[in-house]
Structures are given as structure tokens and as C-alpha cells.
Image (cartoon, rainbow, N blue to C red; front, side):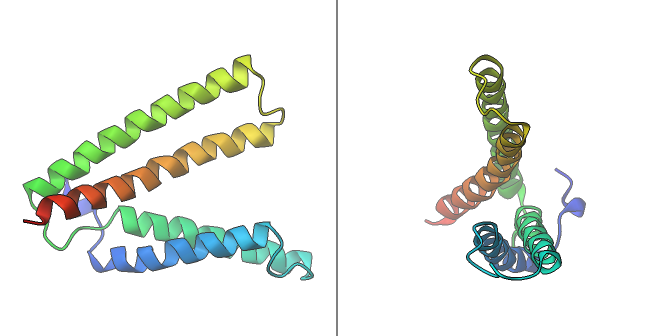
Length: 140
């Protein structure tokens, strides 16, 4: 794997802070717990900022180098990438069958939300599995 395309390690720490904060604020805004009485323009602006920070934090956390980049890290990165891709293919295939044959969800928005969720699951699984594999293997 070409490590020149990965971000420096300190971006991982920044991403691991921005990602959950952006996600939590985005969910609270979606559920109208925060800024329920705000103007429409402000709500839309906050939704864009929080969802963008959530995605940016995810990107920074997933595509950053480890402190020590060696063959072991590259092997775990590739294994995790393949497993995450397989999981995503399985989820997308299930989604096509459920949407096509069971006709659920009934709306296009629901189907779009499901497939966006498949992308989210791919990166979340990659982030969790890679960090777990590296941390458990490095301990004596």
C-alpha cells in the first residue's frame, strides 16, 4: 500500500475528536433538540457544518498514518479494507433484495438513507477493526 497517500499521524487525533462531536451535534440538530426555534437558514447552515465536520473527522481518522508504519500495519490495513469491502457488498446485496422484493422502505429517501448507511458502516467498521487489530497485536 502506498503510504504517501496517507495523512500524517496527528490528523488521526484531530479526526477522532471532530468525528463524534460532529455526529452528535448533527443527530441533535436532526431531532430538533438543539436550535429547534432557530431560523431555517441557521438550521440548514448548522446541519451543513455538523455533517461536514462529521465526514471530515471520519476521513481524517481513517486515512491517517500510524505512529509506526511498517509491513505489519500495512497488512492489517489491507486485511481490514478487504473485510470492510466484503461487509459492504453483503449489506448492499441484502439492501437490493429487501428493497426490490419486500418493497421496504416505501420511499426513495429511505432507500437512499440505507445505502448511505452502508457507506457509513464501511468506514466505521474499518476504523474500529483496524484499530482493534493493531492495538491487540502490538501488546505482548
